[in-house]
View 1 (tube, one colour):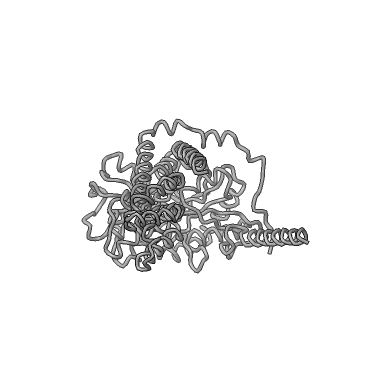
View 2 (cartoon, each protein chain N blue to C red; view 1 turned 90 degrees about the vertical axis):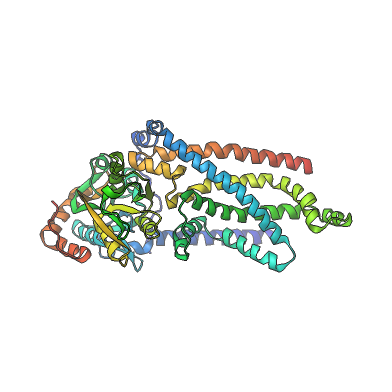
Length: 240
Length: 272
């Protein structure tokens, strides 16, 4: 066993000219602004649709999971475990490249990406909802049942609306993750923000598109992150 | 009592961490342990980047990189006095990595182009290559002129991508050009029918066609007369040594041997 330093530092390699020419050449971005903007739109739409569909599917999963019937809760549990316990990258590769072997061929790259992101985010959303629902005091369910409402009616009109409000900050954080996760879908060739940046990077031999893409992600994620923080603070004040 | 227990715990954690770090660095030295150049010629280790998913030029067999490029680079190392340590990376990251001095060299079926030569240096050419159009035999695509609105797959950053964009600019390709990180992903999409054709290096697509059981075939050779070179950072000290070694290898019959082994026939012409 020989020891080798994992990092080497050589100040003579410091090259500000290279940094400027390769990483800060924003002319490249402005010349190709249309294609980047279009790809940015794909990213935003992908994340939005996946979030909405993921919330619907996630709510169903959460309700199934907290149900006392094993027949209902076990499949939901397995689903959540599988999608939370495996990398999204593997999920998207299976959904796009492997499904033709069972006769399903997804033609639209956007659709393939949407399916993968929705299925994945639903598992996380389900856990958020489950935690939200279980955080509502048990007495509320008892009160609902005592006043003659059924389990489903109490859930629908009393528990879920309250739980939903509490889940808005974690859902917003989940949405931020989802926006960044759309970049993983670029592996199938979908021209979202990251792929479009890398295509431009390859065409121009400049690293600037990657930096520009990072700024685009930041521009949309940062406001959401601060929004989630603000909502959380407000919620904490009110419930304190 | 409590504090002795705590300091013992801290010491234990530190010991475990130190052991982990030592273990990880000793195993990870030179890009993933087992990937070292098996038959290199000793001397100093140099890091060589390659997109090791490109048979028959570079691919993994039993966890070791192998192929035309690997054999050639090991031979060059033996003669020039260095041992290549292969780093498996995506192709589109190689030029940036060399320009930033992340790697000492790269051998990855990389065509010498004037655009690339602005940012990195190349050795003398070591392989004469062409592009090709790969498509399912029954798809009714016989040449690039018949592509119409077909979706064409390419690997990101390759001369196949450059060629496809040229064809699109001149109107021969009317459909979408889809880029993939690895050529294997593009081949999968083609076999699945998710794209209609692939423009890529002839020898690699040829290899895929032969191993596809007749699903896909080379429908057209696109002559480009391009040549592969070993890529180096600008003004690399290694360039002269590598060129001398390459010249020797071409001269004494070793080149022909490697060529026959991987391409299956003698080279028509040895690139100079």
